[in-house]
Length: 186
Image 1 (tube, rainbow, N blue to C red):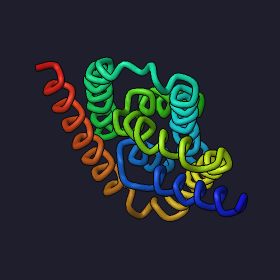
Image 2: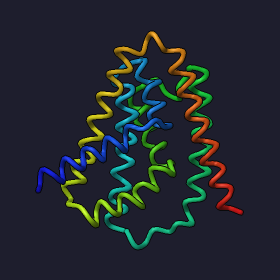
Image 3: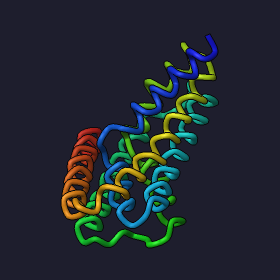
Image 4: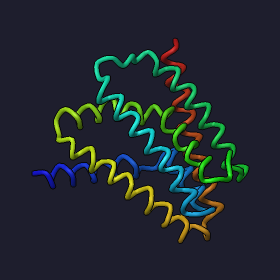
């Protein structure tokens, strides 16, 4: 049964980290520079997941949902900035250290990541073993090393398209997040 919970967590971690979205768009764009640039962004986003895990684990009954509307607006504006940086082929930082903080700040302001932890994260902690959480982070680690490797290895032929698609995905998420933040303010 222990292995079952851990394996279930890995599958859940891959499903959380794998879908196209703003973070994976930045990972793909940075992976064109080097595998470590992309992995650094992913590590930052995973650190945000770990932060949310701790918050959900220790403060489950005290989270004020009214704060989410401001996180939506901040996150949406930040993603607009990142989308423009991708289109201009200039990321806010050239170092892996800076990429880590990009991933961390995206993760901390990403309403989808926050909502995932407030919903599926609660379920994970309540209904499954804590080993499933270890599996979840193992799945994320698998993703943040394999995805940048694949993009770096095979993406050079498609660099221009990866940049345009990455920016497009970021803009979609940015506008969607801003729209939801504005709706919550009204």
